[in-house]
Structures are given as structure tokens and as C-alpha cells.
Amino acid sequence: MYPQHREREQPIFSARAHVFQIDPNTKRNWIPASKHAVTVSFFYDGNRNVYRIISVGGTKAIINCTITPSMTFTRTSQKFGQWADSRANTVYGLGFATEQQLHQFSERFKEVKEAARLAREKSQDKMELVNTALSIAAPQFSQDLGDELQSPPVMCVNGPEDKMFRSQSADITLSSEKERIKKMLSEGSICEMNLEAELFTLQDSNSKLVSALHEANNNVQQWKKQLAAYQEETERLRDQVADLEAHGSHGPSDMLKDELTRSLEELEALLKAKDEEIHILQNKKSEYHEMEQEREEAIHRLQEMEMRNLELERRVQNAEQNLAASLEERDRTESEVQRAIEILDVKLFDLNDLRQSLVKLIDK
Image (cartoon, rainbow, N blue to C red; front, side):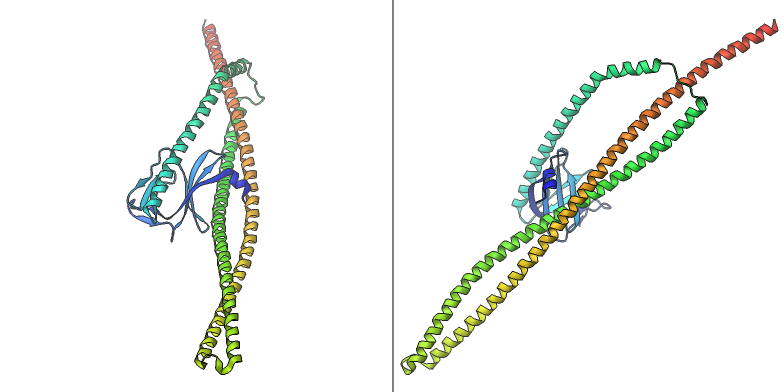
């Protein structure tokens, strides 16, 4: 249904609960984050190898918490539990309908926290392997750098003052480049949050629509059976009334005829009501198809936004590469300026010695 996003994040467990957040001022009182019970789900991001707790109310993300091995879910009562999110600088609280739901959520929280710990250890092992490879390659890099430093300095036409001006210009360019990268990263994060909120809202609406459609189809089948039974009963009563009218005085009394007529009218009224209910259900089914079309359009917009997000990530990577190149150029320029300053110090020292020698020679 959502091919690109489903490959990235997979739902693990879901439960319905009332969501609360701690009051940032008092740090004691709870503030309701949702007016009614909402779906709280565990998700696994395969690309980043992280686990998250996500809950969406309407079009707003109420909870978007990345699980870390240091987190702990505490059961403070029979139906209430809480945990702290240091990144968001808040404490989340969940109120469940039953104690069993709280127990299931707590056990799943422990399992996901253990999985997050294993994922972090695996990532650290990979980083150790990378660091080992870098340490092996470091001596060769140091030798190349030493050869470069031993080469004679390249003096520019305007002297060291021009190099200092170039260094200051490089600092200004690097600061502006950093600001532009931060802005692009913030735009990408906002787009990603909007995509996730809209996607989870669509998933919740779609599940509700599917369950409502199944329930409506079951009701239609049941009412069709009742309608057929009522039609058979109506035909049987009509036959009885016709027989009574044909036999005249040989049949039951007029009181029985009136009773049969009333029963027939009640059955016809009930049939009419059931027909109206079937018509209403058919209209709801057409509305469901319209909502399905809107959902497809929303999916198309999501795909476009994901492509835009990928483009932003690509631009950020290019900007980071340019920034790294600029930093390298600045370091090289500073090294050349430093060498030029050292050479000037040596020349000044030699000139000073020459001046003193000339003074002594003049005095003699």
C-alpha cells in the first residue's frame, strides 16, 4: 500500500491508550496530549536501525520518541505507566483501559529496548572496525603530509598579507556555508515529520474505513436474510387472508382477519425500513470509494514529498562535501601562512644580526 515507506519502517506492536505529558513548569502535573484514546505503536526503521514509539492524533504527531537502551518504562498504577525522553526533555504517560494492556505494552517495551541495545552494540562494533582501518592507514597519510610540509613554500606576489586576507575570506565563506547546510537540514527534518504524521493519519483512517466496510457488509447480508424471511412470512399471510376471504363464513372470525391484516401491515412497514437501511449502507459504500480515491491522491503527494526529501538530502551531501573541501583549503592556506611567518622571522633575525655587525664595524 505504501511501498517506499513500508520498506523503511515496519510496525511491531500497537495499543490504544490516553497519552499524557509532564507539565514542563511544575514537573509534577500531567497534561493530556489527546482528547481520547489514540493508537500508540512501536516501529522499526530498517535503514537507520532504530526503534521508535509513534502516536498520531488527527494530523499531529503526539509521540515521536526514539528508544534508547537507557530508557525505562515504569508502571505507576494498575493501568498507568510512564517513561522519560531525554532528547525531547519530557516525560510521557499512558493510561490504558485494562491492566492486561498495560502489561503487554510494558513487556514489549522491554523487548524493544533490548533490541535497541543489541543494535547499538552492533553499530559500535562496525565503528571499531572503521577506526582500526583508519589507524592502519594513518602512518601512510602522515608520511605524505610530512613530504608536503618539507617541500619549499610557494610565495605569492603580494606576500603574507594577501594570504591572511584569503584566510579571513575563507572563514566568512565557511560560516555562510554552515548556515545554509543547517537551514537545508531543518527543512528536510520538517518535511519528514509532516510525511510521517500524514502517513500515520492515513493508516489509521484506512483501518477504520475497512472495519466499517466489513461491518456494513455483514449487516447487509444479515438484513437480506431477514428480508427474505419477512417476504416469505408476508406471502404466507397473504395466502391465508385470500383463503379466508374465499371461504367466507366457513373461515375464522373477522377479529382474526383484522389481526392478520395488522400483522401484514407491520411486516410491510418493517420491510420498508430495511430497504431504507440498505439504501443508506449503499450510499456509505460510495462514500468509502470517494475516500479511497482521496487516499490514493494523498499517497501520490507523499511520494512526491519523499522525492523532494531525497533531493534535499542529496543537496546536503553535496554541501557537506564542498564544506569539507573548503576546510581542507583553509587548513592548507593557514599552514602556508605559518611557514611564511617563520621564514620572515628568520630573515628579520638575520637582518638584526647584520645591523649589529654593521654598527660594530662603524664604531671600529
